[in-house]
Length: 294
Image (cartoon, rainbow, N blue to C red; front, side):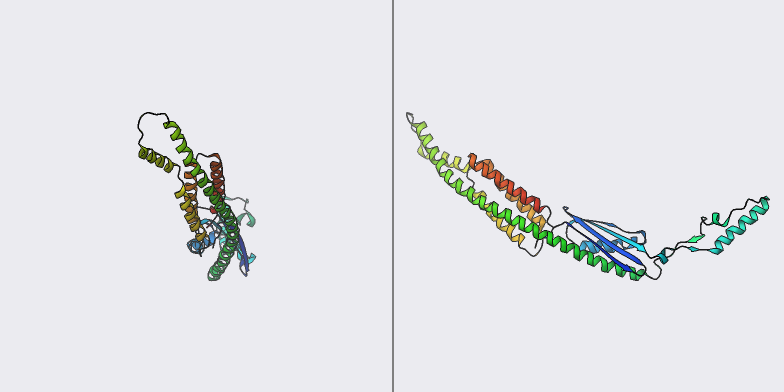
C-alpha cells in the first residue's frame, strides 16, 4: 500500500483535572524527524512520546504538540499565612526599631517569596495523566495514519495514470525508433556506396561492414527499452506491495530517468527527441508524487 507523508490530526479529551490536547502534523522528509513540544509539567514524558511516534509512524518530518489546561482548582495558589505572618512581624519590629510609622500594607507583602504556594498539580494524578496521554497519543497516531493512507491512495491513482502514459509513450518510441533505425542503416549504406563509387583503390567490404555495425551500436537504444520496461515492472510491484516504500520508488524513478536520458543522447531524429522530452516530462510528474510517499 502507498501512504503519504502528509497528514494532520488534533485530538482533545477532558478530565476532572483539566483538558489534554495532542496535535500531530507531518510533511515529507528524506528520513524520520520527530519534534515534540510539551508543557513543563510533562517534560519527563518526552522519551516515551518520541519512542511511540518513531514506532507508530514511518518517515517524514513529524511535529507533536501537547497542550495541558488545568482545571481551576488545580491552578489556584495557596496563601501561606505562616510565612505572611513572619514577614509582617519582622517588618513591624524593624519599623519600631527605626521609629517610623511608615509600615507596608498586607497587600504589598503578597508578592514576597513564599507567601503564595503554587499548586502541586501532578500530586495524586500522575498515573491518570500518563494513562490519558497514552490513550490520546494512540488515537492521534491512528487518525494521522488514516489521513496519510487516504492521501496515499490519491498519490497511487495519480502515479498509475502517469505510468500508463509513460508505458504507452515507450511503446510508441520503440516502434518509431525501430522503423527509423532500419531506414537509417539503409541510408548509411547508400551514402557509403555513393562515396566509394569511382574510387580506384580496392575497398575491404568486411571492414566497411564492421564500421557500419560500430556506428549502429552508438545509436542503438534497444537495451534502454528493455531496462525501462524492467524498471516499470518493478515500480508497479512496489506500488502494489504491502508496505509503503517511498525511497525504493525514488530510486527506481531515477533509474528510469537515466535510461530516458541515454535514449535522448543517442538518437538524432527530431521526432524521437521530442518523444524523449515527453517521457522525461511524465517521469518528472511521477517523481513529484514519489517525494510525498512514506
